[in-house]
Image (tube, rainbow, N blue to C red; front, side, top):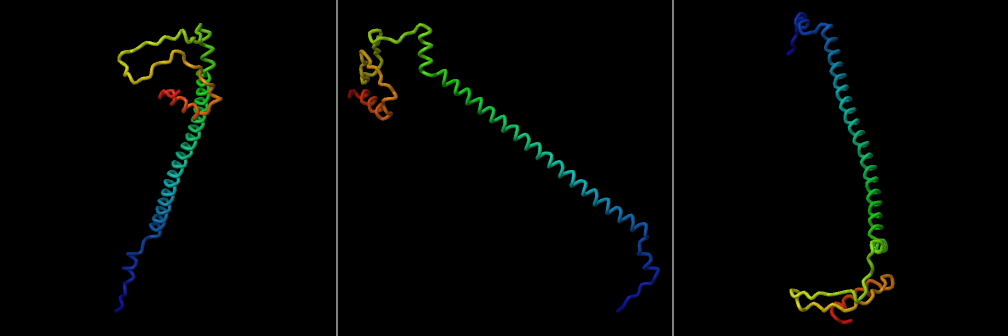
Length: 148
């Protein structure tokens, strides 16, 4: 079955040329607006990423500076705590090494009896450079258990 539409009916559904041009321009403007919004969002994200990268570089530089300062302070502290410097400073203040006859021990009644009695004259310690850590440990353990 074939349907024929009268010409006036087809003219009623056909749009005016100015209306078609208006719809085309509106579509183009909407597309342009979408592109501008997406471009603006892209620029905002890229700007934030750039700022974050620059901040990260600044923080890494600051971290490196703080690590160098910490290392410098540790070296200074080690120098200040060195045994030779402390001994020299004690001598400057008027202190002197104690002789064995100047050392006095006190007996404390509340200590357990299992502790070894203090030595009257402590032997001079062996130089640390001459003994290995294992030799030092074995000597310390033998003194502790009364073996030497």
